[in-house]
Image (tube, rainbow, N blue to C red):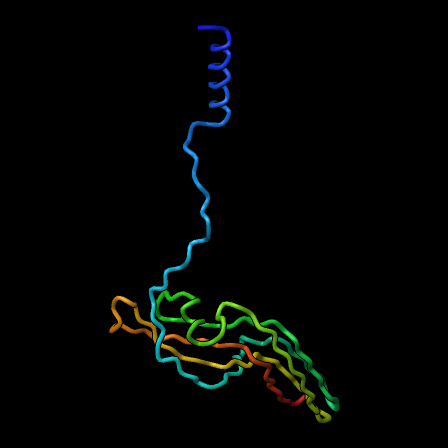
Length: 163
């Protein structure tokens, strides 16, 4: 073997040692798309809902005689749930809004508190509420219930008590 051949073999072995010998893998050309296994059916408007006591987004209080003013502008997440492991995309496509996003809600109120009373104001997200049924595409006779709520505004709960 000539000197040139030996140098070429040695350089080739060193290059393989540095680069590794694992086969190259091609990068995916586009992200994988989710497989929608569920049919969402029987979507019904169920009304509006003023968020519960654990869903206060702002509050104020004051001793009367006074006027309490509460202005709110807040980003609030949509809510959804199901008895089965359905994906957000399937639900969003049927209810008409993205159930895994947040929406900005705004409103303002003024509340007169009489002398000798303590006044309270709580702001809650106001949701539009939908119910739906979900079934596996392969076994459509088995259905489960679900719900979706989109924040559309702010509602206020106002009250007084003896100071």
